[in-house]
Amino acid sequence: MDSPWLDDKQLAAWVRLAAVVELLPGVLERQLRDAGLTHYDYFVLAMLSEAPERTLRMTELARQTNATLPRLSHVAQRLEDRGLVERFPCPQDKRATNARLTDAGLAKVEEAAPGHAATVRTHVIDALSPQQIKQLAEIAEAILRRLDPNGAMSGVYNRYDPAAD
Amino acid sequence: MDSPWLDDKQLAAWVRLAAVVELLPGVLERQLRDAGLTHYDYFVLAMLSEAPERTLRMTELARQTNATLPRLSHVAQRLEDRGLVERFPCPQDKRATNARLTDAGLAKVEEAAPGHAATVRTHVIDALSPQQIKQLAEIAEAILRRLDPNGAMSGVYNRYDPAAD
DNA sequence: GTGTCATAGTTGTAGCGACAACCAATACTC
DNA sequence: GAGTATTGGTTGTCGCTACAACTATGACAC
Image 1 (cartoon, helix red, strand yellow):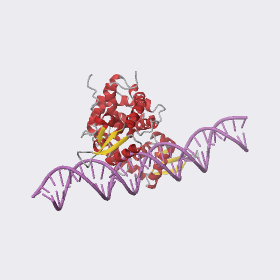
Image 2 (tube, rainbow over the protein chains, first blue to last red):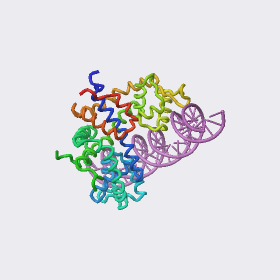
Image 3 (tube, chains in turn brown, orange, yellow, red):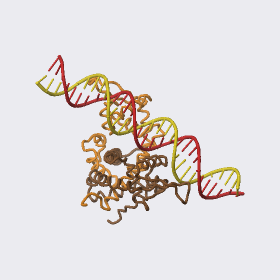
Image 4 (cartoon, chains in turn cyan, brown, purple, orange):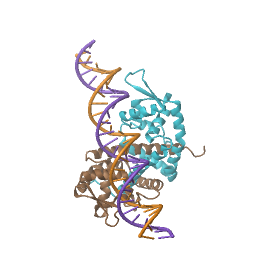
């Protein structure tokens, strides 16, 4: 057994990261519940809100949000029923469907955003020193190069560049 | 707006962490699929395998794995049907139920462990320098003090102490 | 232009998790 | 020791996601 397992320090880092990955989604989910949104719902609406014309093709939206197309299709259906999103066939490619954030949808994101941000701040950001914030960005970036080698989601997180030291 | 939102560096760290949290579970899940286990199944079996007598009370097991009791109850039912776990009433407290890992269950974890460890290594550990491993342990620990203030899962991750520098 | 393949999306089904409702046993109170 | 509250678990139902199957459009070969 040369490398199959992890040494003490690696294991210490891993179990803690695993615990964070286990706990964080629940915290985000419960907070957004007040706004009547799933964390994934919020993510979809947020991506649309930042897109040109508040519009994206379903495939592209699925890629950015790390979802399968069926999953997004179901979610879009429900969001459309609630009037937060509308779908219309893409003029250029009749196979494709565009999803656009409605005014009501935009209002919904803007309503939910502050609470969401506060949760992130309270549970993550405020726990760390400025130096650790920087380290975290670098560490997560390195991991993402492995988790997301094709850069499916990279368009999303590369919009926010830690750049300046 | 004094602090409701995040500054550039904080946002850069957050979106990357969020992407990791989004992507990592899927990777772990798909890998364990080969072994016929959910990541949560694996977690349950692993916790039992490290417990004295390979036995834990349901409540304690739920706490350590960050699950609600109903969830664990369903999972335990399925694992029991597969012969990987057995449940029996606790002699001291007749309300309580103990879950014990069977020999077949132990064999199952040991079968699944190397592949799981390899995935962790490939997607996380090997992406980081030794210094970053140490930083990650500290960062995750700090976040956990916020996410898990009551230390529900702390018994788990504190078993692996990054201690020595 | 016809046959084949790839791409874009929807729909149906099955499995898992959250929540609520419920039952059983213990602990507290007087 | 009777009554109430609390703790420990299970069961039932609903909503969401993965996967498979299917439809429709576009691309490419010849």
